Image (cartoon, rainbow, N blue to C red; front, top):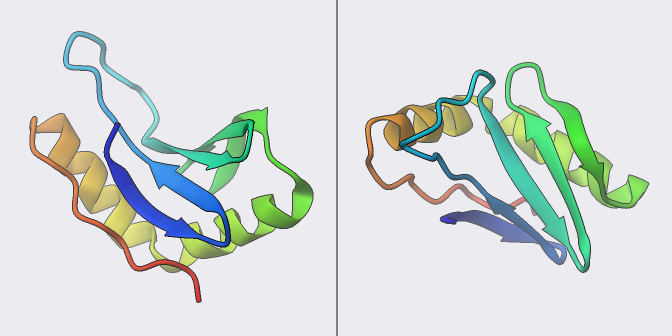
Length: 89
C-alpha cells in the first residue's frame, strides 16, 4: 500500500484494488496498532479507531491537502502510483 505521508508517528496510506471499485475516495491512517479509514471529501472517519489527538491531526492534515488526496485517488484509479504529500508540521 503506497505511503503518502508520515507525521507525528502517523502513517497515511492509500491504495486501490483493480478488481474492486471503491465508491468513496478514502485513505488509511495508522498510528501504532490503531488503524482508521477516512473519507476525503468531506474528511470524516469511516471506520476504525485512532486516539482522538491523532484523529484531529489526521483530519487537519487531510483538510489542508484535500486537492492532493483527490488527485492521488484519481491516479490510483488509473492504475498509476500516487504522489507523496507534505506532512503536517
